[in-house]
Length: 132
Image (cartoon, rainbow, N blue to C red):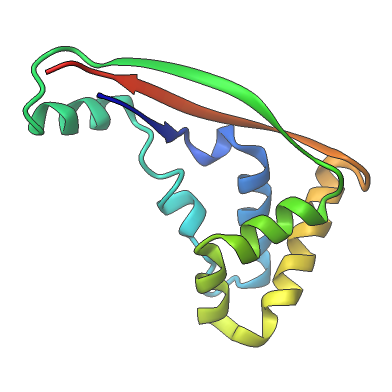
């Protein structure tokens, strides 16, 4: 079996910057989708235990890969994350009328961290292989 999972949010810069930005916009109930779901299942011990619980007896091999995510502007990753993932549902659950504001806030946070032009952020994932 071969599969991959994102590493923790701290290893994925755009996701982390956007999550922190949205925490400041919704301080009473910040959206947690990114840290909870795509970046919430990264712990090697947990993954190994789950694989063994699934009937695999061989030792899984985990390889961590770091790459770069690039976009022509801060608005592109902000739009992708805030309106193109289930994070959108969490933003709208807090206040449907603030989706554009949240997207702009995320874009501004990315621009503050990476600059106003083309942006380049680290992304990291684990590739896991295991045989029955």
